[in-house]
Image 1 (cartoon, rainbow, N blue to C red):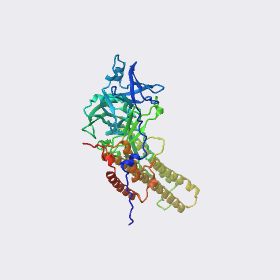
Image 2: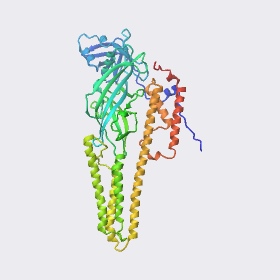
Image 3: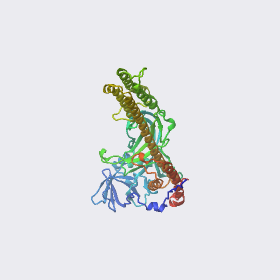
Length: 558
């Protein structure tokens, strides 16, 4: 037996991680406020350093003013800035007469953890007033699919009961009032209506929204988190891909949208308290199998600026579960009977009791009767499924689509075989006027072999497709579990360092995803690759624990 060389993942130290190419950091511009005044409901700031080309940005002010402000206009030289607020209560204070700007906000925000939210704290009224760009709010999204109770293949919709939570980690120090954090998110524009789930057809109940202010998950003794909660029970659109029906796998997506510009809000997946699909409550388990199990896969994206009237780009988070259709119903009730009817068509090549060929009328009668039986059976099954759907919404209904599915291809193969048999039964006696029994037996063997070969090829293609899909699903789940493991080991590192560590491990463990599941990837070395990946992950995390010392020094949960 040959020795197998295992390539382990060598993870760089924290210093080399930070020195590797990463996304450019946010600008560190800041300036002292020389003068401030309220003019016609707008805060006008005179700055010591110019601010150019940053309209529609958010400014965080410290000192006597405090708060977070929205840039409405910038003077040509950049030294004067007109500011407003996204908060309706702050806007009302600005328009009131004799308003002291220092009395509008009692708080300020200051950066404390790199790559994370600015921390809200009481403002330093005696300190010089300064302004800087406000760090985008980092929202960690978590979706719990409490129940997926309907899947309509024909209408291409699904119904689910979903709980969404967006967590602002370490947003405030202990002792800070909840009203201050709610005022902060209002100044950023993060209102209740700014958070929604897309592709909703209808709501089965009123949308429930709430806000909670609780001790931080990571630093419970010193910091607080703000959690925005959303509960939706409704029907969602999903474009199903049915080419491989009834052996298809569907990705059911819940797209979370935050309608705040991406320069103000960053949407991240919560890998510390990950999204979950409660498989035990899955009411369509008799039709679909949850291939992603309890895991909910996430993918970050942005909106298309062309569909926005203002040209804005907004963050999106797509949460996916993978469901594979259970094909037993279609195999037992459609494929096997269709194959049986087709094989019975070869009985038209039989002989009479005297050893003579059957006459043409008898042969054609057998073949055409079986073809009509197959057609009638197909319509009967389709009608049966549609009738059941009236009462149960969906029981694996046959999709009515314009392209051919895997099931359609097999049925068409069977019809084509029966058609060729019928044509042979009519034409062969006319062409061969003498006794050509031996020749016809060759035709029988050839047609029987071709149909059997077609069955084998069809089964082989289906088997390879299922095998390719299983491999692709395995990669997806291993990548997801790798993200969960990194978040568990190092919950306090910045998301940029976490993403960079994930990319390093994926490259070392050969977990790269192809553009599409490729059947050419599978050979006799599949088990060897699997063993190499599992050995690599163990070695990689041992290296992480020993080498990444600076990351480990970040304050951990008490």
